[in-house]
Every structure is written in C-alpha cells, then in structure tokens.
Image (cartoon, rainbow, N blue to C red):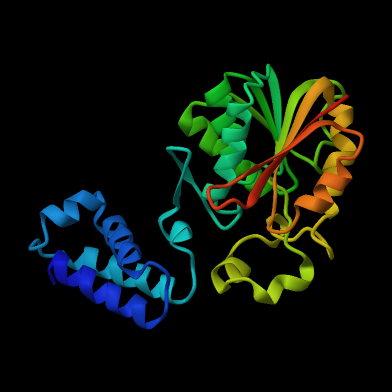
Length: 274
C-alpha cells in the first residue's frame, strides 16, 4: 500500500460515510499514523506504508467513521497559530473563538490582569497571556479540563494560573482588568439537533447553557462586576442568535459593542464596567 493509494482509499471511505472534508481528514489521519507533515505526503506518494503505519491508519479511519472527531484522534487542534493538545475532557477550540482574541487586541485593552472563565483547553487564557503579556488566571468547573489547560500552558510557555471552581467563585474581588469567556450556549432542548461528533463526543458541561442557553451568560454578567476593577472589560463569544438577549443582559454596562465574524454574524460582545 503506497501513500497515494492510502489517501485515495481513505478519502473514498470517508466520502461514503458523508464525513466532512474527506480528503483533508484522510491526509491528516495518515500523517498522524506515519508521524509526518502533510507536505511530505505530496512529495512521497510512492512510499510504501509499513505494517504498523497501515494498522494505525486503519484504526484512525475506523474511529473517525464511528464519529470520533479528528482532533480527539490526533489530540491536536490549532488555535491562533499555536498547536493545542485536546482530549474529550475539553471542548475542541473553534476558529470562531479566535474572534475573542482579535477583539481584545483590536480594542487595545492592554490588561495587566485577565481572567478566562470556563477555560476548557486553555485556548483563550494561553493565547491572551502570550499576546498581551498580562498576568492570566483561568477557571473551569471540570478538574479534568483544568489539567488539559494547564498542560497546554506549560507546553506553550504561558504563565497562567488555573483553578477548578464554579465560574469566578475562587477569584478575589476587584482584581481583574479583563474577563473573557466562551460560555456554553446551546439550549438543552437542541441536544438532538447537534452533529453526532459534537453531541456524542464533546463534554456536555462545555456545550449546554441550560434550558434557554442563556443561563451562563446571565451568571457571568452578574458576577463579573465583582472581580473587575472599575473600567474593566467583559468580552464574550456569542452563540448564533444570542446577540439581542445578551445585549439586554448587559443593560447598565458601558460602551457595549458587538463584533461580527467574516460572514457578518455577531460573534463577540464586549462591555465596560462603570
């Protein structure tokens, strides 16, 4: 079995199972099985796979066909130009969440201290700590997710302090210049409408925001003024169709602004504490 043939056969299997991006997925899984970069595949299509490489590739294809996300198979996901390690204990970082980082940087907030609430893999906390040079803290209700995030921070050289707690319960009052969050915002009733890869594999604690999908937004907005210094900012990712209700929850805050993504969909909301 050559590299070129393995890619074609893997692509065909994934296409027949209606897996998204079948060619790219086949290439990524083959690279992981062979421990090479994608460019290497194109340069060596005639290379014969060893028996071990073929066995690994077959197992990874089988896992993907069963619905396991590619990122949980390889244990990797890129976020803002950095490679994060991911496990089923934490939500897979989405490129949409990069808009939170971009909003903070474009607003030139220059925080000295920042807090990431519901950190998951640590993508926001680690990225903002490295991009802004701020002292960073991050919380998550899941101790397993905190362990994933702390490992990412250590591997990427980010000075972030992590704590397992409910939202901001363990954070002292009036200590933060910036609070960021990508809170769970999927209503519980929409569980069955999610993709199988998301519903069956990613942690429900990080997906579902209560019956309405706004419970976590409400709690974060209520608790953030306690930990923010006067004039501090709250920046959150928005779920689809959330902007009007979340903006209403921010009544009484100052300088409320909404940033859209490249498709024009409201993606980030920011507000300043009075």
